[in-house]
Image 1 (cartoon, rainbow, N blue to C red):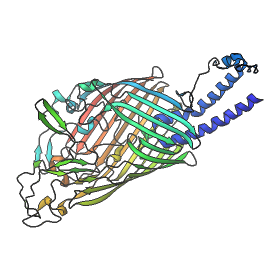
Image 2 (image 1 turned 180 degrees about the vertical axis):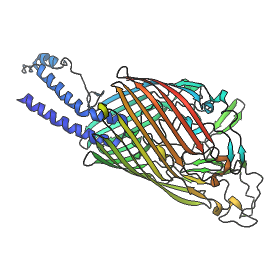
Image 3 (image 1 turned 90 degrees about the vertical axis):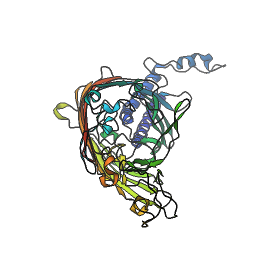
Image 4 (image 1 turned 135 degrees about the vertical axis):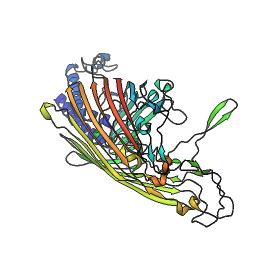
Length: 571
């Protein structure tokens, strides 16, 4: 009777824990965790059965006869695990219970080797910062472009070095930088389940640590923090996928970037709260880390920019600390020789300009996620706040806004119940990199800002041109993106995905000038098809063909044809 009563309590606790785990999982919006959450109910039922089996096989404890609880004989028997019953099993798949606590922990990840064979389009990776990414935020961002007519400059020749076939074609590289280490904990509390999650890979990079093509193959790779967040019930704080992302709508690719237009890759520091709703829904709001970015005739200015100043010493070269300065370059020509008299009567010759970008308020998001047996759909909205302030005469504020709809549908055609159709669409104004899941060459604002402002308005003969703040123009940039993909399962361990995506931003060439118009992208799009095989459950290998193209503001184009090979062993 007591045994049946205990089993009933176990079942009730298990059901409650499953519901708490599901509701908490909705707040994290992490693709790897969602698959775990779907398995929680089955795992908990198995755990109940295992405990019942252990209870049935363990003998009744001996009576207390003096000394220490039956001379230890019954205690020794009870300490032995029943055949086939795991000791210290955790509350979620592949986890174990930390002794003496209610916390379950899982250490996992995978070892990955990714091989890239650039049939065409690999010219710019020679001697540059190395990456195993040919899609979004990868090689496609800086493909060598051809020649053509550029307004303001006339006809320009193609890049004579990196676009030349002997340098641009047949580039080969491999790297383990996508290898990953994950650490996750879950603890039951009176407020719901508390969770922490850390994830690292070896794609860390900045101006002081990036590896070249050869070094990227394994010499001194730098760790990169992907995730670091904690949750308590529906509350989340830390670095996680943006609430404006939908990882469940992203397609499966052999390389980091997948296709342009995917929303699920945006990781950002944030605080978020999620509440469950009816019919498999969840509603969430978040405040996320801001950044103000400006594309100008002299390049990018941003609150999140790391520029290195270089110099020489008796022992060689060195890198100085980052300098937040704008070179005084007007359409590719240094603004030297200017000796305009400023308002104070002193010379106003400008060689550099302080970075005018300022971020003073977090990004705000709202999202609604609806999960059904046929798939899911996700709606999200975003507000972003920007400031341009040079500390003297310029002080302007702008608001970016946009929304997305994303989801997936299981068509269940011809008996293939695992096949999936995935989609996403994003549109807005001054969204910047959020217009395409973190695409870092998409900018929210464009400006003709280049030199130090010396007065508020033009003063004939004393302060003219861009030395006058009123002549500085700033324009929000509208943008949109979309992604579509189909995944087909040939066998339970063999599948293919075909996908395509594109993004567009309307950068005004009149503001950034003809030089930047040759490098700033107006359109990026790519497509791929792959074949993925799991010979055993923890091994993934496959091959993928990728085609990508960039079109810059001036209309010049570059393209790539790449074969990607992968071998990954999970643990």
